[in-house]
Amino acid sequence: MSVTREALVMVPARMASTRLPGKPLADIHGEPMIVHVWRRAAEAGIGPVFVATDDADIADAVRRAGGEAVMTRADHENGSSRIHEAIGLIDPAGHYDLVVNVQGDLPTVEPSSVAAAFAPLADPEVDIGTIAAVITDEADKVNDSVVKIVASPKTIGGVLSERQLRALYFTRATAPWGAGPLYHHIGLYAYRRAALERYVALPPSPLERRERLEQLRALEAGMRIDVEVVDAVPLGVDTPADLERARLLLARKT
Image (cartoon, rainbow, N blue to C red):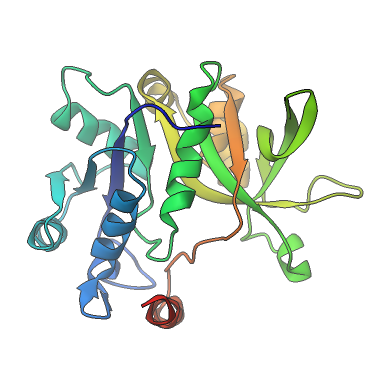
């Protein structure tokens, strides 16, 4: 599935991390983590990239590196809400009707994975695109911090695809039951702008609260989420140990 349209790419970032204070500005080989994420998002080649933040130091760091940042309120409940405000500030006329949300704590994310999250929107029936990877570690299959996608393969050219799926549910449980792959959900999202508008206007849903997974709000409202399967799970940096691992991984790449 080819990507033929341009989108705004938004990287939400905030300072309020309890396990790793000042996380977006944590140094990785001489540059703040948020700058690494911004660079990788830009390398995806989807469209202009903005960091959406409520912290002036984060915005300054991005601008010093040659990137663009937009200041948002501090009271957003999640990154989707933050980028919704930012898009209204950047593009009030609605020139862009597609937007990709790249988490600001994924310094090892592959540019191809960012593009993969965007690819499902080539189908006009899809509201939201995201990505997943096949779980290969047995421990991850029963780890409730590893979010799984229960998804149905799409039919491409009359054949069931192993790489393009339609999401039916997201869960922290081990699912689905039976023989076959389990998929690790990676929290990059591409939205139609109308879908993002609808999502942020919805109240938290019952299953969202129960599983503590915000994407269930969209599914419970009847929105369609399609999935591209990628080969690698980017490291999410939440702790000092994660930060050290990111430094090692990025040192190998360079």
